[in-house]
Amino acid sequence: MDLGATICTTRNPACAICPLREHCAAARTGDPAAFPVKLEKKAKPHRHATAFWIAHEGDVLLVRRPARGMLGNMRALPTGPWQDDPPGLAGAPIEADWRGAGSVRHIFTHFSLDLRVEAAVVSARPGLNGEWWPIKAIEQAGLPTLFAKAAMLGPAAIEEMVSPT
Ligand code: SF4
Image (cartoon, rainbow, N blue to C red; front, side, top):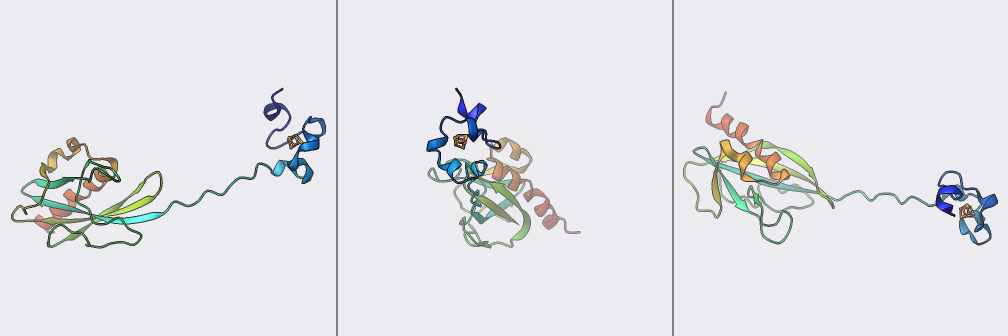
């Protein structure tokens, strides 16, 4: 007999005809329908980070994330620390005239992240590790979803810098 399907159903347990009644702790409480107790889902921790969109002559600087850790070894925009509070420009790879380009929210399995994007146009390519990727072909860079979303904010921000209204 499948007790779970026929007698001890979640909303309406038939304790009166249940062969386990004498040994059942839930029945002894007088309110067997209150079991199993649903555990409240813990809220996911929330983090913040800043990504840097560095543009030069139609290209943007992409880096490889460290092999260990989130999005390991994947192409990405350079980012500062991922932490509990917004880090602002901490971890910016260069000094520049940064402009806020907006932010994206992404939900990972164990936490959510607000990623702010700061953009700058540089007159010369700084000597940073990474690769300069054509902005027009950014969809082909294989960016993980978080950085693909962030990359959508960069072009509009630098367009405003190059041709202010
Ligand atoms: S006695 Fe216990 S196991 Fe049986 S139906 Fe009631 S609650 Fe379920």
